[in-house]
Image (cartoon, rainbow over the protein chains, first blue to last red):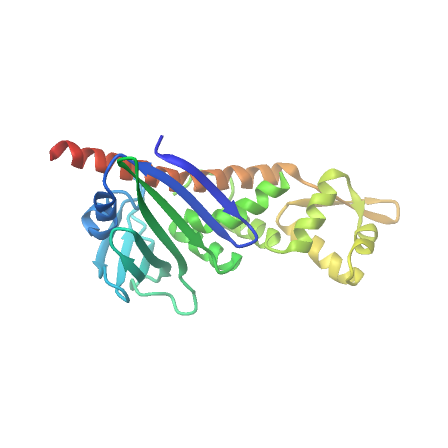
Length: 159
Length: 114
């Protein structure tokens, strides 16, 4: 089982997912660092992502679009906030307009990923933090399911 | 990208409605049993009009319905809408799990080709 746990915290608007891979931290790091590898998992097979830019250095940015079955192309961007290879990656993920550039006034969602060697495997913990629910609604447009985490927590609490 | 039975507008309205703590509280109460707007208004330290506004937002999202009973308007929760939204959100949660599984597949393929 790849995914060990997934949790949503409404109070802090945070989604945490823990997964374990049968590979070294360096290999798992590689699927984030290498844009050609990143493209193979960031979007679902029906909505593959294409990274047209991936400046994988602190302060660097990425640009990507996803291609839907009807030819629609939702776009997004990243900003790399921290790199400690192969232990920790911090980045923010935002919404782009049709020109591929960040939509002004829409804050990107900050998050981080950690990689730990555990008994010959690598445990990857991905944490996404949402600024507010309005931001999550905006991110919905590019299938940012992470953006739904807080709303999910709200609904779980109601059901 | 997700197959669901709600339009984007409907989803927006549901999340906007749920984004407020008072509205979530109102919804929880009326899902248990219907209550008049005035009974709801007594629960909160805000004006009748403010509570009415919150109820209207919930009503537009189809999360509650209002029924006239005599002189009173009874607000009732609509669990079906909530369930539909919940099912949609489960699909979104699944996407992160799918991502992790795709990474696992990719790493397995790399392992084989080494």
